[in-house]
Image (cartoon, rainbow, N blue to C red):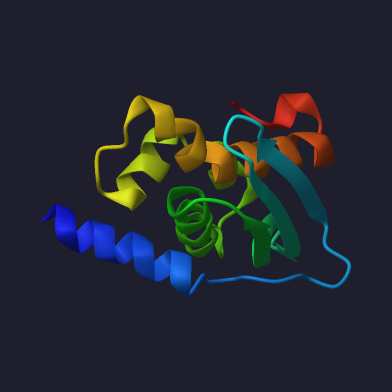
Amino acid sequence: MDSFYREHILEHYKNPRNWGHIPDPDVQHDESNPLCGDKLHIELKFRDQNGKHIVDEVRFNGRGCAISQASASMLSEMIEGKTREELAQIRAEDVMDLLGIEISPARVKCALLSLKTLKLGLFEHWDEEDIDE
């Protein structure tokens, strides 16, 4: 079963979903992992639907290892159509579940770079009380 997930990770790494830029994003943020050199930039565009902010578009770009880039691709697919309240509820375990394999302690920061970038971008955009870390 691990080989399936490893292939899935490589597929997202080689063919990332939601790669690129959004003209005039509502949220954008850059983060990096100085220990390994991974870099990530995320952009979100929201639409208002019945008073709720819904992710209409998400894009990311960056460079780094297969784990960091694949997790960003997988997370980008997961958050499309989510409310900002739902985004605030995403946890590290959710991202690790997306990857589907056990990640060594040395690679956890790589795997969670996309979530860190998302959360800090949201934190900058909305008041601290709106984001439940």
